Image (cartoon, rainbow, N blue to C red; front, side, top):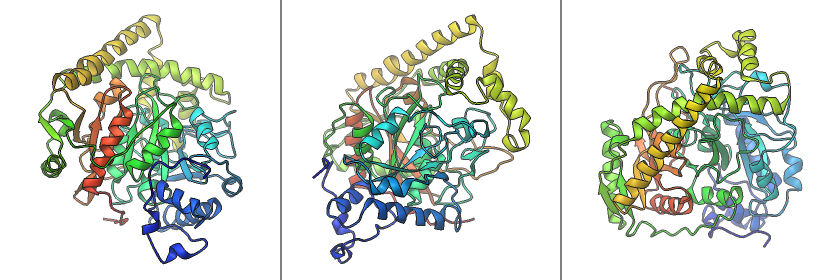
Length: 494
């Protein structure tokens, strides 16, 4: 065998009769592990996989239900599939969020027209890893433009370049953001996996809203080189998949020296602390959560109810203050080294004004304008102090203190309330998402499907200490086995 298998796949149980065929197309909602098994047993080929998903994208994304999650297809995908390298991901098709650089036939624009005429000179570090592992990067996903840092009135999933991505479970509702396209594409069966990015909620929020697995790793575990930035203190890429097993498989490629053991009984004896303040007040979500807690108890987990993060709100406020300052610094550095027609945040603001009809038909760029004013040495120094205190409050005195005080393995809560309806005139509804503490601390946060409320997915969050990523994924895998809550979307329009 030319690659190490993560765990034995269940692919051969999908369709016993069809498995006797020499080559066959996969089912729409098939995991990376299943596809790996099909390739190993020569039931399919990398080229056939790419052709299968390209056909499904044509049927569902650009016509039919029009989820509109794919921004651009790789015109060389079939050629790459025919000659992809051996490795852990050999022949497996992966989608990439459009703020992750690829030096190929595709563009990298963060959904903005300002970057559409100048391509990056090299692949992002994580893209290099995927290619070396044999993955077929066959498209770029839409996103909330500039990863949702342009305006407080934005609509998640909308970009000037890509238009609006919709939730495949209810097309009238938000896919959330900013990794909207990555989440919606995987949920709709347009790809077995995608790579998203998160600064605060941009992986876990769309993953939970679309009913898939999303993993935000410890910041720094995956290289941020080649990712269009907001702030290097919180930015990270992460896997968005159908199963935790698949997320773990991708982490083995994306991170150095990442090893993991997935056991179905990992919850037995695990001490899990309930974050009540982060769980919201939605009655149906809380009822679903209570039923889920009982399943955890039945699986042998010890539930500690409840656990407080007393500094969470202050940490979030300080981090936001620092983020706008860091946005200007990090964006200027990125745009300057990339080249093209836009070399700074100030020039980007001017571009958007010059192309207002295309770039700002629904919302403005208030955050950009605010950040551009924060360039003095005094302000930058104040931002550094705010960042240091935010990390301390969210991490050492927040998550770490809570885990230690109660001798916990992880913290848990519902990831989200049901996604809101899309309204381009008003922007996003204020829907609760439990992302800020882990985002500000830079700690791992996994969301796994928990169930449905009002026919929309709700996720279950597992949050841990820095670099405890493998343990969090192991707990998530065990959770997934006892809940089996993910289901295929119906593309309802109502």
